[in-house]
Length: 267
Image 1 (cartoon, helix red, strand yellow):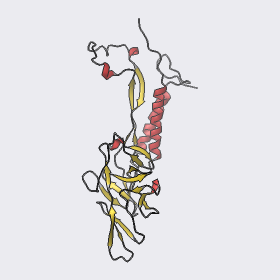
Image 2 (spheres, one colour; image 1 turned 180 degrees about the vertical axis):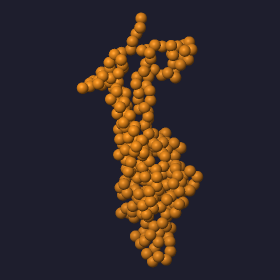
Image 3 (cartoon, helix red, strand yellow; image 1 turned 60 degrees about the vertical axis):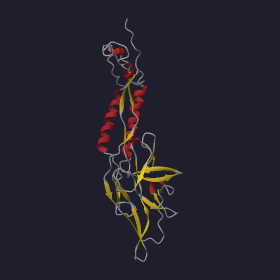
């Protein structure tokens, strides 16, 4: 006697597609955000059993493949853990001395509420304590290690290897005020976005390794430039359209499953 599984509850699959839509829209919305790294999402197939555990578990070879279609414990799809797309964005020349970009794989480190955070956005300003900070994250997001700019500084220069100097008002000489250090991670794709282009380290990303620019793998500083978002709007819009089509094809309270297995059109 055939034992058919009950109709699949499509709610988790619908929720997964809606989450993917949200991430795609989030990427598009931040296509003009300097230093923004798009979120990579991926839908994966879901089953009611662990195939890797069941395969070869004392059954005859090929038993799983011999199962009838209605006995396969398929459960639609789910959203895999999102990852960061760490491909660099294009560099935009601004000519502003406190706009810094990284030509390479490193991250700027700032301190936010006593905790380290990381970013590819180098839009810096001088805060009330005369320290360099990330403009979009507020005065407290100071660059680490701290760099203090004296009030008499007339011109600030940052070299490719992160040396920060300023020209005195008299124009007589350049004075050293600090060094920009960059952070690297074993798996930067697993950094967690926390807003304002900031990222936090996770167990998956590993702890940051700090070193000067132009160290192998860290990248070089480009003064007077900002890294643009790495979002490709046309590609995101294409994904958005595909996801919307997929969502419309899924069953819902107003579009139940028909005998053919397709979602009925609501009118």
